[in-house]
Each structure stands twice: as C-alpha cells, then as structure tokens.
Image (cartoon, rainbow, N blue to C red; front, side, top):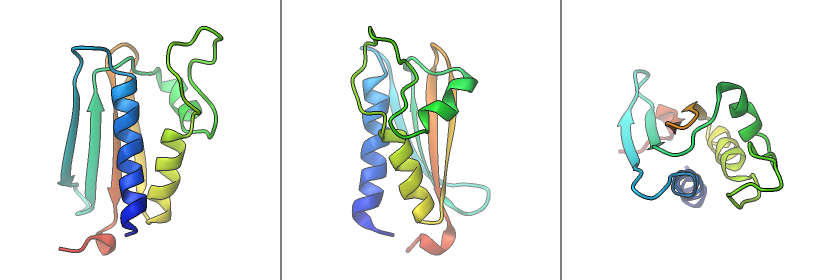
Length: 117
C-alpha cells in the first residue's frame, strides 16, 4: 500500500466525521479484520447523517448533499470521492451507511494481499 494515500483516506474520513458531528457528538475509529480476512477501517460518527438516496451523491466528485445557498458546512465535495478512489486503487472498497440525524459509518476494506504483518 502507498502510505501517503492510506493516510489521505483516513484524513478525509476523519475530517468529514468531525465536520458533520455537532459538539458533544462522537466520532469513533475501529480497525479490525472483516469476515473475508480483509483489513477494515471504520469511522463512525453521530453527526447529521444522510438519507439512503443522498449517499450516491456524496460519493460523486464536487457534489454535495446540501446544495443550498445557506448550507452550514464548507468543503469542496471531494473527501469521500477521493477516499473511495484511493481505496479502489489499492484493490479495496469503500462502503457508506448513514441515517439522517443519527450519523454515518464509512468503512474501507483493504484486500489481504495488501496487508503486511
């Protein structure tokens, strides 16, 4: 794996989690092996969340879920799409689960052949 690219994935996921989680909310990171034996890095927050139909838009470059002129969060709309692309370049996959007003969980899974012990 490319160390800089993996760091960028983690920075993007953590930045989004912190940005979209209000004060007194929680952001948690878990690193484990999934059922396939792949390395899974999961970032879970108790932030604003998204509806299921908003997730594909959040994964598009430069797209933002809240496109209104009065939106309350700054950004370019590249965090998740870039993390997804970098993960896929490593042969991995990115998965998003989210519930509006409850939070978001983003998991990146790296294949076993990319893991060095």
